[in-house]
Length: 265
Image 1: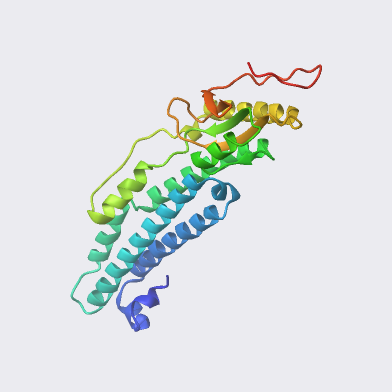
Image 2: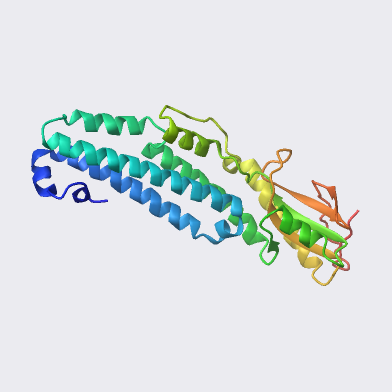
């Protein structure tokens, strides 16, 4: 947002406030705008559209950043005329930005959150692309409808287990807006683990191979979903038999090469 928006006499204002402070104001506003644009780009991602949990987190992040931007703009709208009139010193603006950089809404922290979310999206995409053509269901209810469908004897679902509601840092951000204080979280994101990623991609490849071998077998149903399960990091495969969940870690995905068929034991 241009600095001119804060005062109709912006030209005069710029003459009386140092160019260093003017540049700092514009920098912070531009960076918030960039965060907003980047968040919009992620919301338009096909993977985000397919997984409501990720979409909801991005929208929450976007809303919180919007509220923070409004608060910052309102503070600037009060301080800039006061500085021009000599009621406040430029140091009050510096303090405003210093406080922001110590808060959950610092540029570094906002950028880090988005980078983590983009990484999570890309990891999920790498698996989803491997399982091209397999139906993605948005929630447990939709999964149940598929599992209980007439004629389905065995349903296998590739489950992203670590995509879950309750992002701790979003709670910190929301809390700060209500009661400004320092806040941080220390978590080791699963999507930065090469071991977890390699296992997920290997599992997705085997799942796709198994599904391709059963294309003509109507008793099988293959699905992809995001269901939180702390017993498994990254992903696992659920096996439903006649509507009942019989395994949360199905691994018998070998295909008999002689007839290109599979058996579930």
